[in-house]
Image (tube, rainbow, N blue to C red; front, side, top):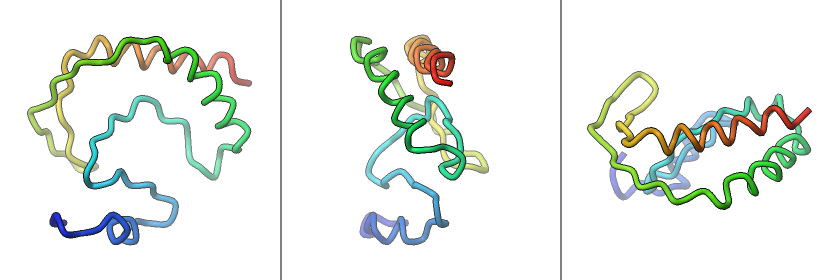
Length: 100
């Protein structure tokens, strides 16, 4: 896609239920919660409510990105240093033990 492609057009090409990251941002998947048709709004809201206070006081992450590593599912960037990401992931994963 080129820079003139709008986000609306980009998302219109997606499969139903697929939530694509906007073209003008980077994202880092930290924890997969599951498929949207397999999780209730109540469960999602409980996870968000429990996660927010646990991550609110964590320091900002200073990361370097690259080099690019393309694969079958997308284009990845090496993230460094990984220890801050790993701590954030562990903090988020701990929520799973508190949500029934």
